Image (cartoon, rainbow, N blue to C red; front, side, top):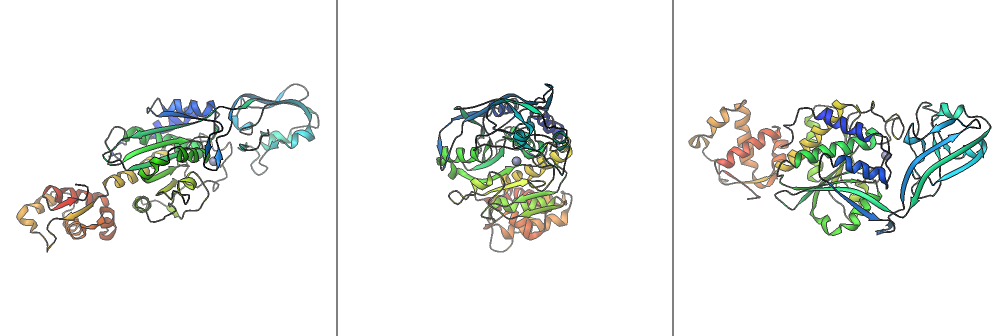
Length: 432
Ligand code: ZN
């Protein structure tokens, strides 16, 4: 289905990240909308607006934040920190401020990383109304004991929380949820990699009629998934599988974080795809921290949603700093992530359960000419074994993935074999 797309996907994903990189995103505001509008150039997603003050389970949709400019000027009137150079310089959700203050007073509002003196940290203050600046430790050390002028031209007012949603109808009303957070400003791996890969997976799936219906969400982290779940509770029962996508552009090995249930079909398929990829990887158990899987896997929903990453959040020093930039993510890693993700979705699409129509002893295959068909395929011996395995385990209990795992024969060969046996009416899919 998706895996045939090998062309210039790496560059396309990277190009979208490059376009989105300069935008100052937050959990609400125009940066988030601009991000969704940029994605709309690839897919016709819907932009939803939820008013400030809307109650969503135990939370309330916050005020909307927007920012135009910010700086710190020294006593000579020189800008020593300038939002125009990096949107990470302002603590995200800072309230407006314009005042003069001493270095001692200013210090309490400054954040740096002494261990990485060239990097700007990323800080937020969503639920406490305050202001602050983030700067490199080198910039900090150059500040003197003089008077400074701070200016943050922001607004924090009743408005909306925006999110993007794109639904692809499939053959079945059962859904696969693909979710990514889109609320971080200029941060590539943690944020833009998931956003861009979700966009291109959606784009290519939209050119097919998949077995499942697909629901893609580009949402602000935490409050976005809580808001969607609260406002769409009636649709939640349709979600049978899901993936949260994040941190997919770095050079690290793949990491799959299992759903809370831990033994769902998506968990098994992700493990199988990573094992088959012949690269280093890690499968980790669910824990109630991380990204929006925390909400999808809260006990009241307990959805079969896992999280696909390369290096997990907080496991790389560049995490939540200006070093998570356009160099930290690379096209070849993004493309690998796209193919791992699309392989998982391909298998999910094809992972049927079959019934052997001739279950009492083996059917006489030679009489039907099936051996000639299988011999024309590259590895005839393997395919004879594949035929015998598929016939034997198509008892209405084993999925094709179960048969692939049990036989040690690749999923592709098992699927190919099941298709041939179906054309000879030796198998029937449980979906028929
Ligand atoms: Zn983050």
